[in-house]
Length: 219
Image 1 (cartoon, rainbow, N blue to C red):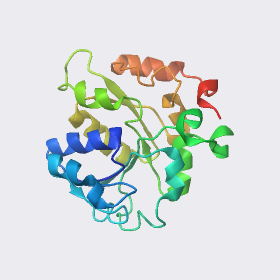
Image 2: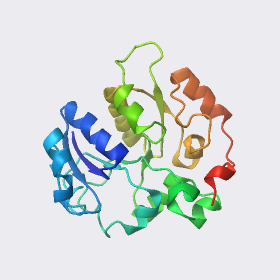
Image 3: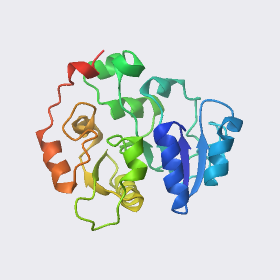
């Protein structure tokens, strides 16, 4: 696939490494000039592009930036992405640690519903429940006992299925965690978050999650 990655921090950079290693055509952008990504491009073979170009002609877009940065993305950034292209939201709302207060999320809108509203496009919540280190260090072949599983939430079945297949290709099982409005089950502070559980464990953890956000993850 041709994949656009917005964000080149710990998660975005490691996803760029994993995706290019598996033969995908990756374009990566950050909030600075493409030249700032020269080392990552040289290492991986990904194309370093401007953020206004990263979605052009792609089959899938990955957002790997802080929630606070979502409203600052250039207007129309996804206009060149085909209608229906899966948009993966890897982000987490971390008000005390990084993002500051976002009122809509504090009042109960799920993180990825809020992201969807900012973008004007449907998103798939995925790849937010694993550390960047484990993303590259703990992938395993399908069928390996104890293989880490990752939850995937979304409203569009086709987009969700595409993302679940990609997660399997990256070395993890994928578990359907419901709609975007149910994606609170995988937000920070829930039993599944960064727990490195297998598929059965993820299913159980999602079932046991509570919608109230822990105080540590509230503004």
